[in-house]
Length: 134
Image (cartoon, rainbow, N blue to C red):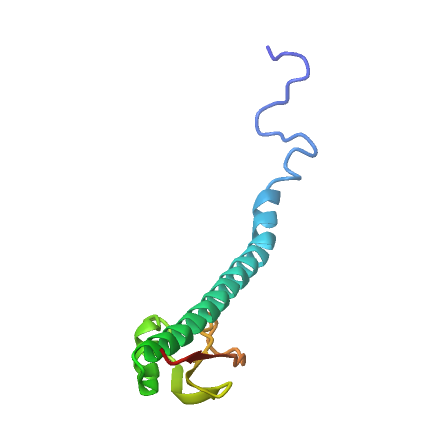
C-alpha cells in the first residue's frame, strides 16, 4: 500500500521540472561578461606595467649616462633596463643643455602590447627624462 499523497512511479508532479537547467543557462549567460571583465582588467594591468617600465628605463638611461659623463650611453643603459616581454620600443638620447648647464636627455617609446590581436588599438607610451651631468 502507498502512503496517502504519494505519486505513482513514472508520474511527474506538475511544476517539478520547470527549473531544470536554469543554473546552466545563467552560467552560460554570465560567462562571456565575466571573461570580458577579466581580460579588460588584465589589459589594464599590462598597460600600467608598460608605463612604469618605460618610465624606469628612461630614468635609468639618463641617470647612468649622467653619472658616467657620457650622454651617448643613454640608449645602452635604458635598453638594459627594458623588460624582455616588451618587444617594440625605440630609445634615443644625447646631450641637452639644462638651464645653461650640460645635461643628458633620454627618451623611450614603446608600443603597448595587446592581448587581442587584430584590434585596431595603437597606443605608444613615451617617456622623456633629462638629468644633469655628474
